[in-house]
Length: 526
Image (spheres, rainbow, N blue to C red):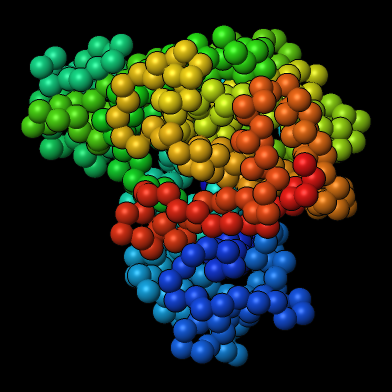
């Protein structure tokens, strides 16, 4: 259970600082209405508001993945603000409603709760070695991700979950969650490779199912461990069986139901990616975690987002191998409290971080850029992308979640592949849309966080690490067709895209992608 005593207030103060730093980063880079100008003044960043007031704070704290200490605060015309929701109110940003303030408060509270739940580092054997001995090493590692999304101020928002429900269901509290299975009348079921049996999260059972008395419990329950996304869980009996449930709770930016498009698209996109990888990308370097089945209850003749599910099937992981979500590399190890990336560098690379960057970047770039050239831009952020290590060195990648990627029918067609008939906004032939989807996830998020972590831990200048990534891009370019060079050239542009998540929270449609631009540390290194 989380501590209530002496560590409670430091955890709360630290959580406020971490969420405030994420919000400060959004003020520094995102296209937010009401921000008139930005400039640096010595070590400070100054953001000007339309009414003439200014927001001032450390420029380093506004950088992506900044680490800040408890007590971090921003100055609004001489008034210090350490609380993100209070700061938001003081800024008077158009569209910044009390709802977003509530989300920030919720994020702070849950982040403090998550940190309080973590045991003190014990100085024992590396956490990854402990994880490898667990019945489900992947779930064990995913549940070590304490801080949530590294750039989103709503990194731990769970609007709709009580404190007790967070403790019972959130992965960082390491519960075993008992899922229920309900029988669905066949005439009220839309299934893809899926019989009329709905797997239901207990939150959904307790809060939603009363309105559907014709759904009948099928007996028993399915014990499962929540993964990073909370509503996706791995079966205790068969850890390769993952089920994405519908949970009407806002986590970060979205209410985590399952859309009709996801039901339709998941198995089709999984099959497309499997075929593309088998034909053109060495399967030994990149494999898909397929969405093998999906289903939804029909309500008034339409698939109900709140009564739906998707099943995934993890590929085999050989003895001696461990799959690690890239986001978990920044998570603290229970051994010494340092990031898991440090353990990989120590165990697999003899303490040489540059060699680790070389190998991981080389593994990432060739298959992801090949797929982009063929017509599939993976949303390869740290939750969707896993690295499989053998001897604690990267050997291949796994990709999961078919909802956020983008597919170009015209690019596929040029390579003799016909795109399946897909629903929603998943298709685009716009090269900028495709590149932005991949680059924002891969470079601005995954690589950016890894560079920040390794730079802090080893005292290596970020420019040195980014130069190694640029070298890996150049090496990958040599193995690509000439027609792919335009995509690669965009990697060395003056700026890189990053998702503008706070701007999206303030938009009329918070699920429509918006982007900001970051100075590109690889510009000029082509």
